[in-house]
Image 1 (cartoon, rainbow, N blue to C red):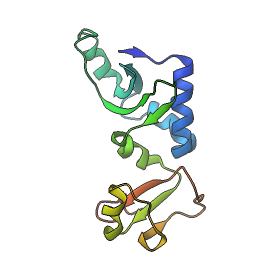
Image 2 (image 1 turned 120 degrees about the vertical axis):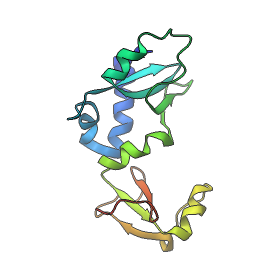
Image 3 (image 1 turned 180 degrees about the vertical axis):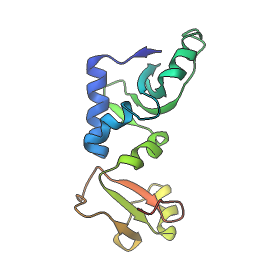
Image 4 (image 1 turned 90 degrees about the vertical axis):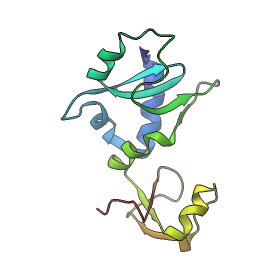
Length: 142
């Protein structure tokens, strides 16, 4: 477990900026407890500083994961987000799309969401990219 280098941090923040915009700072400077990003075996984890202190007692070869996996660096050097960070992205997302329950399974199987499967959409949402998708069955309203 090590801190991210400047280039790695830049790549992570650029990717997060596509989805949550200027709210990236709110992930780090939280009111309850400061959080940080750490790298373990090409995977970026989001964890509190208290959890990071506990994990420092575990050897590097014995530590598999800690906190929430936000994504990983590919062999080509790109950063890819994982689905496990969706709960954190949805809190601060700029653009949100709510999918009807009938179109939810189709989306989960990897198909595109058709226009008839949309329940709600935020104003000013671009046509491509930077959208967090909600299901109508478990989406927060607001």
